[in-house]
Amino acid sequence: MVALYFNKLMSNVKLWGTILYAFIPTAIVGLVLYRPIKEILIGNSTVTLLALFWGGVAIILLELFYTPKSTHDNVDKITPRQALIIGIIQSVSVIPGVSRA
Image (cartoon, rainbow, N blue to C red; front, top):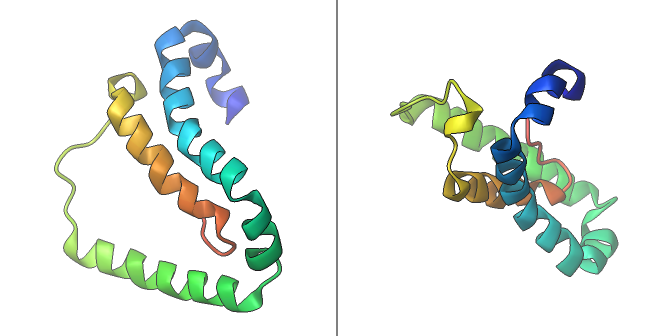
């Protein structure tokens, strides 16, 4: 991905700020909850299985009931608030079995 968007990343200072806003929540969760994540979540098959199951259920339900109100064709239009919300949602990915894809 970096190779694909390298020129855009290097030339757009605002985009760096947006990426930083999206990164902050996950960094905080990772730093604050490092020990419990490592001791309880990593290597726990039950947690991974439940996360995969409920993540699949959530995806199916979202596809059935959610209709997008708008689309972002350009990452330059993402506001810092939206980037922060994206980062908060991505911070759930510290749980094994939860993907950000």
